[in-house]
Image (cartoon, rainbow, N blue to C red; front, side, top):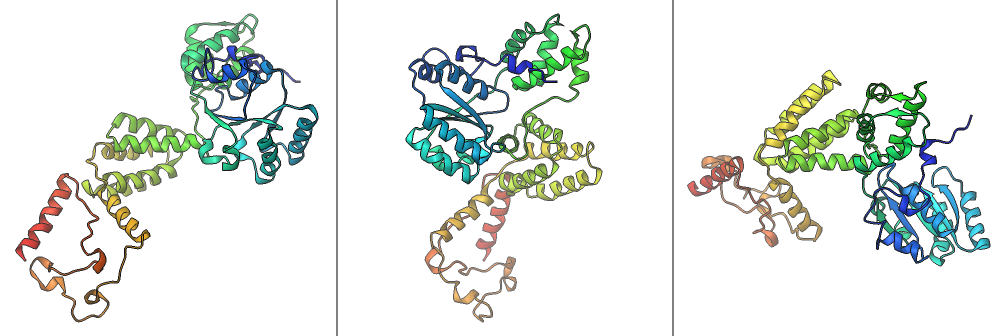
Length: 401
């Protein structure tokens, strides 16, 4: 039996009904002014699920009164795109709304591009992925790109209060509504679905906080292992450790643990150990390996313990990027052709090679770099205790010789 969902019943009919997105909608804001001036350009709306992409596209279409066709880049067939183009030619202006546009294959792009360029269609693409990373440059150059912002708890609460007026006989207090707003993580659709399930799950339609917790036993947040949200969390974890913020480190680690993405945690922590901590604390690599081995051995949920311990140590550790800077500087020279021949005396089997172990402190002055870059300096030690001590020992050896 078909039943119209609450989220569909509440879908805004005009831009003024949209909650949030104040940077795009409102007095003297770009989307509002475009509709007011009855002039629309092809665009891509991107942002997390449930924050209003489809609603904005529908509201624009309704207000302008233009014929609109909704397609999905993955489920709609090539023939559906061809039919949309024919409709555009026959009826004149048409808005083509394409959901998941970042997944559109080359065949569909080839159909779309010439008509997009001519203005036969007005495209509104919808995506959760950053279009600067995932959208074909040929399409990207022909559209305006607008990022939608996350909705706040207050935004979700406002929508939920409006939704309760559509549910006859509902009894729910502010505490329960605030709980829905919080666990929905800015996803309006998720919030409305939870409210609707709770409403129909009770014969008297009285929804308590306990009812909601029984239905939604695990908080929801946006995390797709194959999309930008996943990489945003990994990036935030690395930047938090690099910035020595322990609490932020634990927060982002917890988000990755909550979705049981241990492999990504292992890989990213390994990168951080050598990229951001490096020679300031060279023992962190082996300690991280030990923590990873322990996490693998015990599995979840206990794996969270060694991972939290090593992540805290990494956040509090002194930091140095001298190793990555050194190798990148050397690679930059090589990529520019600054190499030269290996000096003759250190080529394989050359009798003029001075064997360092035959000299005091196992060091002797001789040239190792090619002649044309013999004075190059790639490694520049940072002012942390470990590197300062290493550098001092090295310099003292040279003085003694």
